[in-house]
Length: 292
Ligand SMILES: C[S@@+](CC[C@H](N)C(=O)[O-])C[C@H]1O[C@@H](n2cnc3c(N)ncnc32)[C@H](O)[C@@H]1O
Image (cartoon, rainbow, N blue to C red):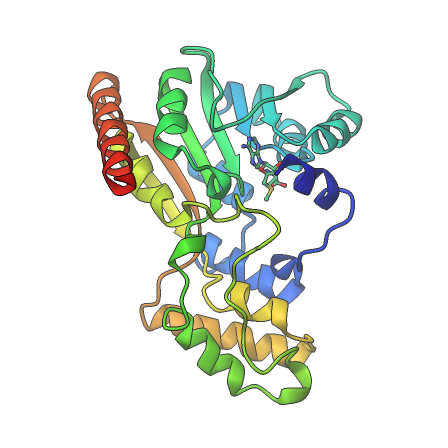
């Protein structure tokens, strides 16, 4: 897996649907609630002046988030880790601040220092975590009292949950678009074959987070149609505007967002630890039973 990200960080092969200007405007409008706001701008206004002494960024990639946090002086010091050595090299080279410390680690097995951090960030990384209960237990232990978790994540269907039936709303929309802007007759299931960690338990992120944390703010920002359809389109300005309008209508009709910014704080620590331990035991028992 880390070889995948070592390659991807140098030469992107996957369509950056979020980077398209009208899409970004749509996302930022959903985050800002009318007035467009970048996620961290929204978070800063939500914080009302609070700053953080020590932060941890999990699955930091090439380090864009940490550079942003330092340039805003939102965090005094940041530890950040990733499994991709290639990404970490770029992050270190670009950091231009000795307030960020990068290191290599696997988030499915990491042991975090106890009561150390005021905030823990996940930026498009939690949807690669298979051992969510384990990692959120580590995060719980690593946070100081009053600490927060910030996630900006894909929380839509996990890779094993996709089926033609599930894809039907997006497929019907895609089929109705002019053939010359579609890359194929049918949408492929949105499962990334070359990265088995992609969306491995994405739909479980929020429920598992809520076992040990209270969600104190949440900004769902769509992606339900756009993240699935745009990678399969030759995008023109008109097509983009049409797709963004269609996603707005679908969200207004009640379809859930596949992406969200979530801010959470730990529940009572002992109770939360016991709940995670119980769920991990239950999961282990279920997987043993399924193998029999
Ligand atoms: C979508 S990228 C996000 C990177 C960065 N946070 C960003 O937003 O640009 C997902 C990151 O998760 C990392 N990752 C995947 N599996 C991992 C693991 N088991 N342990 C640590 N990092 C992992 C990848 O190397 C990659 O950098």
